[in-house]
Structures are given as C-alpha cells and as structure tokens.
Length: 229
Ligand code: ADP
Ligand code: ADP
Image (tube, rainbow, N blue to C red; front, side):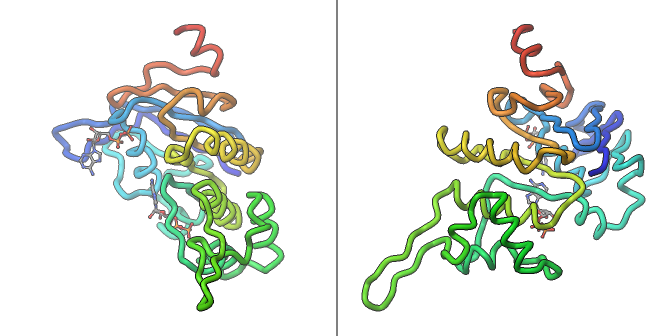
C-alpha cells in the first residue's frame, strides 16, 4: 500500500466560492484515516479530487510522494479502490459481478475475494433473485449482501488505496455494524480513507478528521475527540 497525502488542498466548483479551504492530512501506508462531518462539509469533494474528477486549485495531492497530476488517469484509477454508498449490480451471478472489469483475475482469486467479504456462499446467486417458469423463487441479496459483493470486487482489484465513501450509510444499524466489521477486516494493512457522517462509525481509525465548511476543525483518535466533546 502507498502513502496518501493532502497538502493544503484548496478547491471550489465555482472559483468564486471556495469549498475546501486548505485541507491537509496524511494516511501513512497501511493505515486508516477517517473524515467525518455534517452534510455539505466537503467530504465527497475530497473523494472527487482524489479521482481527479476535478483538480485542486491550491495545494497538492500525493500518492507515495508523487503528485497525482503527474500520473496517468489509468494508473490513478488502478491505484484506488472505492466502496461507494450505493452499489449497482447486474442481475447476473455474484461471481460475475465480482469479476466484472477484472479481466486478469483467476477463478481462485475471485473465490478468495468473495471469501474475504463473506459472500462466497452466494457466489452463484443472482442479486435480484429469479423466478422460474413453475413459479419457484430464488433468493434476493439484501442491502448488506450487495455491499459485500462491492467489497469483494474492490478487494479483487488489490488497490494501493481504499476509499470507503459512506459505504455503510444506506444500511440499517445492525447491517451497518456487520459491514463495518468486514470493512475493518479487509482494510487491515491497507492504506484506507474512510468518509462518513458519524463519529460512531469510525471508532478504530488511526486518525479521525472532523470537517466543517471546508476546513478540518478537529483531529485525533476517537477517544480523544469524545473527551474534548
Ligand atoms: P459532503 O460530502 O461533506 O456532504 P460535499 O463535498 O458533497 O459535502 O459538498 C461540499 C459543498 O460543495 C456543498 O456546499 C455542496 O453544495 C457543494 N457541491 C458539491 N458538489 C457540487 C457540484 N458538483 N457543483 C457545485 N457545488 C457542489
Ligand atoms: P474499477 O472497475 O476500477 O473498480 P469502478 O468504475 O468500479 O472502477 O469504480 C471506480 C469508479 O467509481 C471511479 O472511476 C468513479 O468513476 C466511480 N465513483 C463512484 N462513486 C464515486 C465517488 N464517490 N467518488 C469518486 N468516484 C466514484
């Protein structure tokens, strides 16, 4: 895994209206940093800048010390694996959905990724189920199971950097906990940036940044932030 660093990042969709006003943080190789804050704080914008949907207007974003503007779009996309909030799956097998877009992956690697995401028992299931001509119904994947497919697909890519962008925000509380446990498992030892609404969902990040209106207003570990109120 690589090191990810934001240095004094400034950005506005409209140049007259700054959105990020000097955001800096480092995710050391293999570590997890989380960004929390209210809606509108600028969290998703950070993800978009990392993918270079937009370029920074000030400061730099570095992966392993290299400015992301100096690498090709293709290698940048290859380096980052995202688990988004809403996963759209094809109504084809779980296996197909995991392997989609991963032409070099062997069946054993697909199986292994499915195992890591605890979805291997569903590998031949169809996400939206099926109904046979005699009316027999196949199972449907739940929201949590669909997120497991997304996790397996991302892990199969073996990216240098993982980005969880509100990856559990759409789930009910119980499922959210289960999927978070899995995200913790698969992110262990990988450079991971977690974007989340609530502090309670990122308790064991190595560092948590609290953002508000485009700036980092607090940073620390979970307990430190709680004790400061
Ligand atoms: P968060 O993810 O923390 O909710 P965002 O990064 O989505 O925050 O948004 C930060 C600010 O940028 C908000 O004021 C939002 O309205 C604005 N914004 C987000 N996307 C766009 C866009 N595509 N064009 C213009 N403004 C945007
Ligand atoms: P890969 O096949 O390499 O995993 P994907 O297309 O599945 O690529 O996922 C990466 C792509 O996801 C990005 O290139 C981007 O277009 C898209 N994407 C989805 N959600 C986000 C997000 N929140 N922030 C940035 N990119 C996103």
